[in-house]
Image: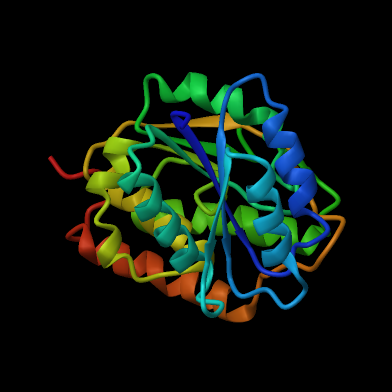
Length: 241
């Protein structure tokens, strides 16, 4: 078993999963892959099982139904903690997150508890997004900063690396949200508790295969969640003493 685990949730990603697995196994650092499949209807789960049978670094969790991104990650985090991984990643399966960035995350994680991949550090690094989607993402980051005070350029991003100790302290059982707001909530829990958080620049490329999972419900949940986080932090816009 390696020290590093990449958690990849899947729902109908049969075209993308083999390519993601191939890219991860070819990295210059040793990583394991955990596929958390949300009862895909297109055969993704079967492909995941076949990959796991051929590669000891690949593992699969099968969910009985699609429970949402946040629940999939929490299941993956719990699986990782039970097996004592030290570096635990979130990563999308659609290759919008470049696996080649993982060594950069690991270098930053030597001195951080959580490393966020940022599309907006030092400029905008987003390819093939319509202007409307780009503006939504940037405005969401500013909105999160205005309400919560978190000083991160990309709090809704889903390419992250957690140290084991951070996930152990995150209170995963109490996390309520999903989608964008899941990303915000977990980061806020660690930030307000004083954990060290770093950002590394990434280039985000819109998916080629499959369809986006972004829905109106996900956007609205994120809109309200930041106010709840502010209340949880006793109306403070800074970490607890």
